[in-house]
Image 1 (tube, rainbow, N blue to C red):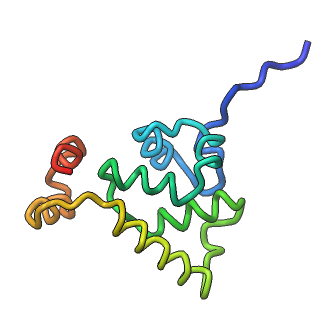
Image 2: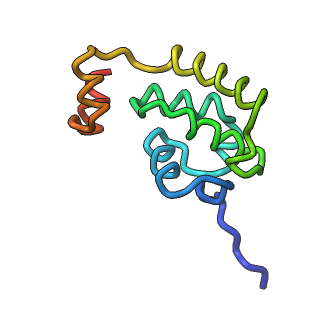
Length: 120
């Protein structure tokens, strides 16, 4: 009898991604490595931003490297500069605008995730 394989692979099975990234993607409905690969870096990260997750360049390029099967710290030089430009465009197009006071409260961790999503 052959073993039964799972229908989906956990997001954390992708190189460089751990439980925190898996939880963030689950929050936006991406619950498998296959779904994340199908979407690709930009579409998946845009979903996080639109949901109110805080933009973080390192998380973005860690995801890009992971989807390529590369170590997170393999991103350097020109490639890193190109990724930074992509990230900046993605962030500008997908980050909900909030008032400046809420932005400061978010930065220091005062507001809860639920409040951040409600204000978007």
